[in-house]
Image (cartoon, rainbow, N blue to C red; front, side, top):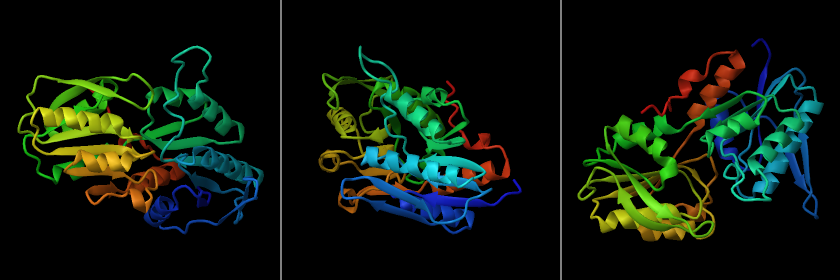
Length: 319
């Protein structure tokens, strides 16, 4: 496109935004953020964006409501400053787990967030690994949903795993696990569990045609929140005498005592990405954090230049 591009960042993940800017060979543009004593957020775009292709990086991770409000105000500020086009880059889309009515009298919160974002003038959304693909349909504007699989596959291949078996900690992640297993030439297994209450899970058994005894197992999920599911699945694999167990996840939410649970689970390695800024006190010695900046940077470059981004969506989930 024959218009200038600028990249802005909210406060949720400035390190990732800076890495994206470096990939693009541009400076991260200025934003002024203040908070009043009662918690109100004040935003000011620090540069002229009239006629500019504007990209705003902001994960709606903890504190989810503050970060979401900050993003809404940044978009409104850019819109009122006559930005040519506003693309929001949301590495982690909060509220994505509330994507349907699972019981009477509850909201579809992921749809509410989509409505809010569109109402303030967003033209396009760039995100990564939505909890469910149907969320793209909640928007009436283009949504590009990237996947961290290419970088994760390259990294896992470099580990030279012994008889690898990819394991989904629940049936909902079967497609994700199948795709990874296919690209690693690995076996596939699934953990069958029951969840009596929210954020708690009871592992029942491991199902699949492969015996995991003596195998290196890769537990994969889209996010680690309280780490109850994935550490419970690790216990089930250890009971079956698995060799080394690796934990792989895109979004390291790490709520509550998740880091302690991961530490006690004694994973050989925990592989996550930087879609969410991980506080230093939650980073474990055996944790590897893969940067998604090259993937986001390339997607932004292609969007700005009017090029296809479809080749970045390698997650075909074919059978």
